[in-house]
Image 1 (cartoon, rainbow, N blue to C red):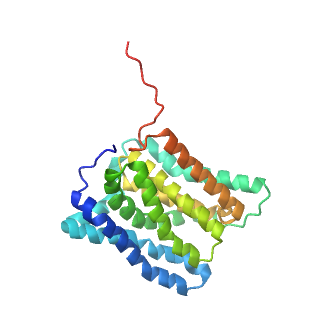
Image 2: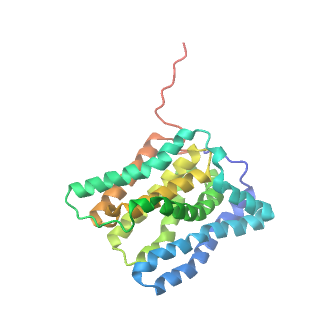
Image 3: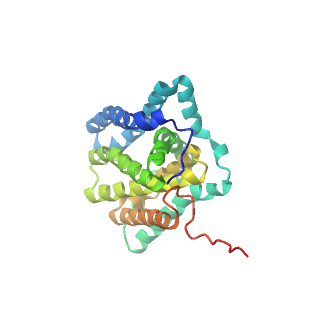
Length: 272
């Protein structure tokens, strides 16, 4: 069985997680209407507005549960750096996505695929990172700060991550359709999102359940996806998605499903 988290109330587990998901989707409707009205090349920008839905839904329901203290407590998870007791985890959090995307880029170029020029120069990366950090915060305070622990309590880390990943992917789907993206690209991206959510949970559980850690991880993904333009070619996206899914499978195989924190093949010293 998965480890239980006493700070997660039974009330939240039983009554309000479903309400959180419903409210998140309802709050996403107006931005999606805006996305349907703007030119296709501007549709993805509405994703910045849609990102407000998870945090808004979580704060509303947290306020109903525990008043202003509950909402403030949830917001405080945004910078819960003290939970990251093993600072070594900052290395994969900051470096995993650049390595994966550069590997995908190199593989794409090596087989002769034409890759478009970046929309932004690399020197703009710090500014873009701050922007992506803010919008990752809007998402992850809701998805991980509010919803995930009760889901893990009910099932386990792996099952909860897969379910949350499916919900997260469905939440993104209208945006991709309205942007007129290729159906094969959309399919690959939806599969990738489920895999990415498992990796986010892996980081979350191994950093003392730090929401700040997964905000960083999420922001690095978005930054790399924007700057490494092979992501937007058919072959490049296929390679990127394949690498992401293979990484997810490695985590699933090598770490126990209950918490995704215990390495399955750790050597056990024999008693003498």
